[in-house]
Length: 330
Image (spheres, rainbow, N blue to C red):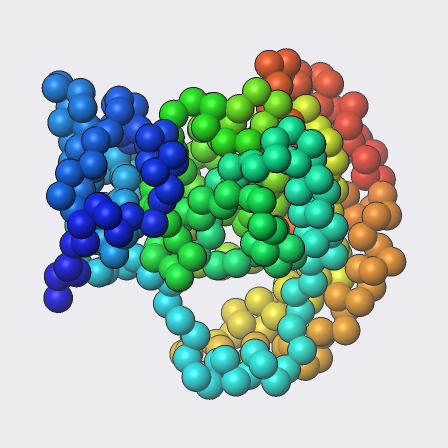
């Protein structure tokens, strides 16, 4: 069934934000016409549909995603959990605990408001609300542009982060929480984030280190603390460290060890339930371990908060930032 295209007066993006949109193919200006955006570059003239008020701005020649997927309503919405799985999730303690995100977002808001009374923030991967985001999403003076490559109740634009379809220096802040492991070229995506941030603009990122595959075929990379820092080598560090500790990493590994023995959806659900009942308590060790030096070698996930800079962190400087306990001998 084909999705009905809505006229541009239902577009969810504010008019001021629409003015900053750019063609993802050639980065020229876009003009809105009936139910679509069209590139103003005569040599390009690419057209991009608007579906239920959401512009689909994807450069198909440089993306694993296709505009037709969204037009035909295929592979464009995160698969919801079954009723049974939701029941299990609600009844059984989870193994995931993010101990830093809430505090980090409070700091992020404070820093944004020091630079602009009404900051504009791009959230990449916003179809699922990230842990700790409640205060950010409820803040009255922030203008949030929530994006993804899947439809969601909060999404106002769809694009592939390898080509962010906004003009240079469009945003005061960018948030990319648990996304960079799912992109093919994280360095290029971070370069795009750097481009669309204003001078001294802020970025907040979280990426996994010790976590098994999630989102199936759309899962590519993991990062150590220094590996994550190197991604943002064109940013001045405000703070960084673990958000999910080694206790969670151990519980996650234990669960996936057990899942290795089964394949069917029902057996996987039962194994997940058993794994969580028998290992959820491991995450509580992280309340003590989260800031310990050894956690930099064993965390489940790391964060980075930084400010756009013209200075590039060199690899020699990067090595001096190691905060773990491992020696350098093999």
